[in-house]
Length: 408
Image (cartoon, rainbow, N blue to C red; front, top):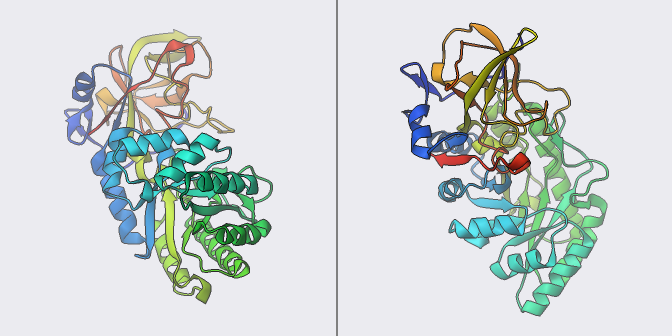
């Protein structure tokens, strides 16, 4: 029997059934119309933001990375909770604008921005995090044609990465950002061109659980920002320190010591060089803000044995939960936190594989996990589903279509 990942705190049972925001999941499914269904808890999102506000230095603003979960009600909730939004496409720009978010609160990173995306962002007053010298040239040309002053920052490709991170965004050759040694010259050119100089975006990695590693990367980021600002010869108005804070998905994972991260960052900010004394700082988080707030619910449609192994076949699968299936960058597949929602908290009675409805052996939500006995019609819950689920999975695969979503 293989262990399952840790279920996040904040979830309870009512009459032996998983409850979210004080409501049984069966009632939520009935309200939504059917499964599969993503449910996001507004209370858990608010609590996570409050934890961050309490732990982080007051000087550090909080930005939401829209790519983690662009569901419109989530964006509308976030509008009143965070200081800024970070997008990675023209499509996400349209999403935040539809949610009523002021473009002045938005920054736009990502390689391969097309001219139409640059134009829409510049016209709206979004800050562009430039990923190359040629992108800078295109942005300046578009701004001149529009007759507007563009808000421009530089995404820096740092010489270091975030140790222990699940996804490394810096260190060595990368499609992201401009190599650090080339940044000062470009910054001076942007300033000379009359743009609204917005500073640096330095993102070294994501999904790390080691507080010391996160703090070390933040310290290196501050050192790099100071060095580049001095070489540029101009004040640094803003610096995005990136994110990096991960959430526990797998057996043995331990939550980030948020208090330690905040304390170490606070100490470092008290020792800033003169060139950064007036700089505004932010951290950019997506998964850490919403990941543990979400639950993916699917229904068991068949129960079968094959060569002595039990399979619980559901109407969900990797087309909605690619990461939980182990097919989203995981080298060795490990189990997410998964439970029989209809018998939440009941004793383990059997070993079962929870699989989806797709005709591929990759469609596996839990591998030889221990569960209470489950029957056809019971609901299965996959936790840590609030980020990179509905929008980062191949919903169109085999014509299955997207899952329902709701914020409660």
